[in-house]
Image 1 (cartoon, rainbow, N blue to C red):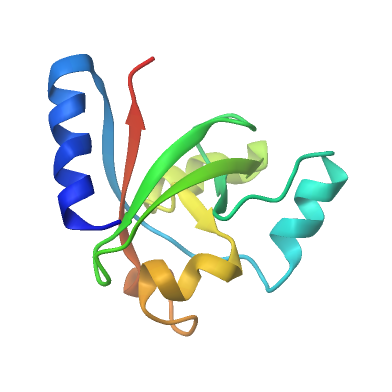
Image 2 (image 1 turned 120 degrees about the vertical axis):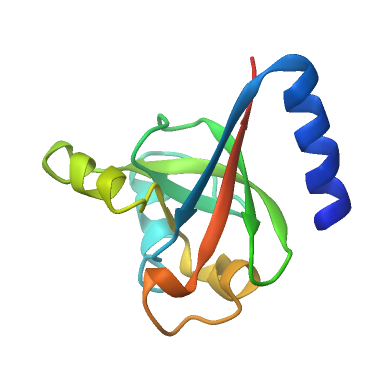
Length: 124
């Protein structure tokens, strides 16, 4: 999915509500997100993230601005309370599973500033 699907999501949000946020996405080490999912008795998903704002089990769409990729991702982990304010202040609203980093960012190297994303949470 890509830019056309993103356009459809934006139209949906205009009509039904939701949240759109621009951010930068660091990533977990290879295999770490799957271990977190297993520890929480959650099934691994094709796209898993950690979030500073959404709860475990919630789903969001993540659009990679550099690659044009759009993925539906489940929140598997959340920011620790002591780190949450800093993550939000630095616009590190999510952290990606290593497995989807290249697809959304174009690379697995570099800083989070090199991985601009748009996070879309549809209205309930």
